[in-house]
Image (cartoon, rainbow, N blue to C red; front, side, top):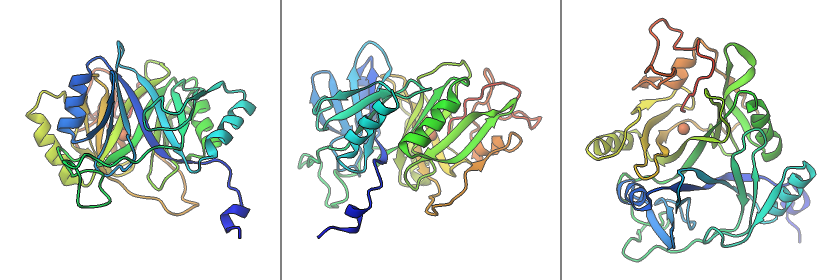
Length: 341
Ligand SMILES: [Fe+2]
């Protein structure tokens, strides 16, 4: 007997932001940060590559740390909803004449075959996969809660939350439209460039009830392929304050925060992995969207400062300055902002 879903094929779909592979010049220092301070579990080490997961992630990993000469992002990976979606997306990429390659199973340990391509307009290396193992943690780390892969430790990051990437203003419309049209992301909140209202300044998009699983932002230096930050999720605002308190006492470069974004309504705290210098947002709270026809919400220039910082430590919005412009224009005269939600 066939089920209803067998008779109505929705086509290939993305489930969520699944894993990210970060190059780091100092693997041991990065491990200290992600494992010992943030509290992630080192699931596996294979040569100069380490695989980590947060305490509520049952799958093999959400973070890959690769020792290499450059602190770059090797892959942003999204999990598909069904096994066959990986092949279906590959066929669609071919139809769209987007060059794609098959990444063999096990290239990232614990993970099945993936399809790799560069985001059109963004040039970020994206990978799509479905199969991933669910290993049990070492007994010394195991939790009594079946929903935890290990006991909560360190600052208690519990899952990968989102990616925030940048591309040039010339190509951001293409990149943003492409992920909506071809990967099924919905635009949730957005802002257009004040001096060029037909060009996206920033767009927060999701395939889940979150406000964003992926944000694309115009790069003020017109660079493509840039990571602004990856975000790990904390359970609540109190955890953000505790994280700030603990990190202040450690040799960890501190960005801004804790503060609350108007966009997405989550609390932020930006820190830098001392091994790679990649920016990591510790992200807590935020509202969820369940209505299928929820509108995309636009932030106009006059309101945008409150979108970035509803309260708390203000986010840089202009080069060489910090926080809000007291004239109320908040640096919007600069052509390319780099909001960091
Ligand atoms: Fe963020």
